Length: 530
Image 1 (cartoon, helix red, strand yellow):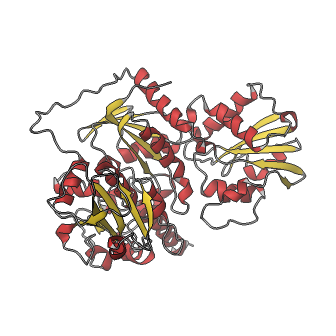
Image 2 (tube, rainbow, N blue to C red):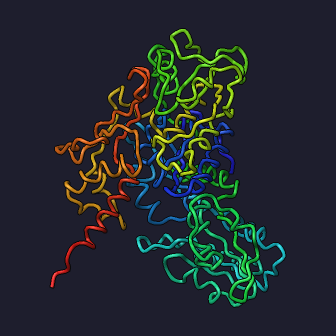
Image 3 (cartoon, one colour):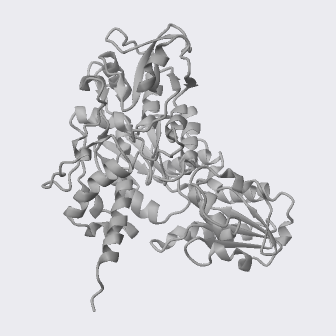
């Protein structure tokens, strides 16, 4: 299905993400970029459960008043029916919130094309295996929180078994519920076994957990990208030939699936192509966030976190040898081009030819630059003060600049602009913890004293984060003085008026994970009553 352009609407792709592996979020950004290039929406962004920007920060990414939300998840289950609606504050298929209309679409994994994608992936990984002598195993996570979490996989098993694909058997298996993927050789009676992970991304599960459960690996390895696990098929294990594929969601055609789901939503809910738009007289039409950013730069803003913003003085397309200057009120043309570099590399940037700096172009490169620190550590929190040096990013428009900054410091420009116009909503820690569910609901039991102790440990020591904490324990309980609570999200070497502050409107999900660990430790330390 092809959908008509929606120039007044935006698309939000929601993913799971990971604090341990950047490949977990890679497909979501790829799907977003594919759709962005087609020019169908005014804006296209991603948000995550485990990464930044969080779902509660997502609305600060958008100017559009109408936003289509597509869960880039594999099933209708715990996350799509409980977590995402809760975090985005959605009350049904269409929700109006703070002047914006959100349309909540079905998850990617329930689309009919998933069957063909699974069969294609199975054929790619085992092209010479006779289907009649092969068992196809579709594997997923499994969870006790929502029975629908496994329904999509069971549905695919039934569809493929009835499709005439010719496999001797098609079975479902899971990591955390029966039938278990660790028992794959007992589930398959054939000499050949093909395992296709029914996940959106190749991350922690498909690189590490499942290979160990299958016996391909003997222990969980490092968290970085491990695509080698897919390059040694077949594996001779337990008397069988085992073929292991990458996750189904890495297929480029998922972008088309996302668009189909939006088209299906419009048909099902009788949504017209053009939303009812607010009409402003030409003189009072509000500025877009990119225009506000441009205005701020023209008035001297040139720093955000560890990044220096430069304006390129050139009448042509940005080139490496163009002169780069600090922003001034004389450089406010909407056709300006921009550069970004590490603040410690400004002297190299300004030298002829930018010696020692690797040049990148376009906002997509920002994610690559920001992913790892100098020592190879994955920067799952982007406000950590360990951004690597040695790069120069060239950007042709202020819109590209905004996209790049949202990769370096997710949603921070939008949070800052919202703070300026007094529309920024802060959520205190106790409110954040009280809405947690599933295995995280035990964090509600932590005392205020325990939470106060976690602030400097989580925000300063374990993962040094530069954001300004706007939240308290609750509305009546401010944070105790500490290095974390005293931060203002601003660099020390430039005036405050010259920098965009890094703001923290609520505790991140890494914080919640640390609370869970503390709650478990507290329970373990509690003596059992005799």
